[in-house]
Length: 71
Image 1 (tube, rainbow, N blue to C red):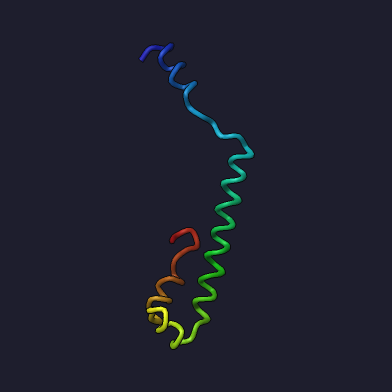
Image 2: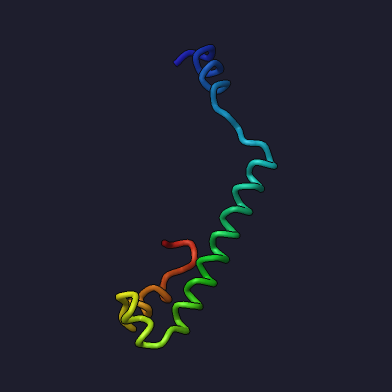
């Protein structure tokens, strides 16, 4: 690859602004917080409520073992 081709190619790479990066990070943090809240609520359900939504205690335990960034 020639220097000219490299420079033309590198100019096409979009670099996000710091504000864009901060927005993405904030969105991820809010999503993780919501995931944590939902899993905490799931853990508080009794066996009857779990049966109503088609989950077992083992399903809940498996979900609670996941880190918040995993869906």
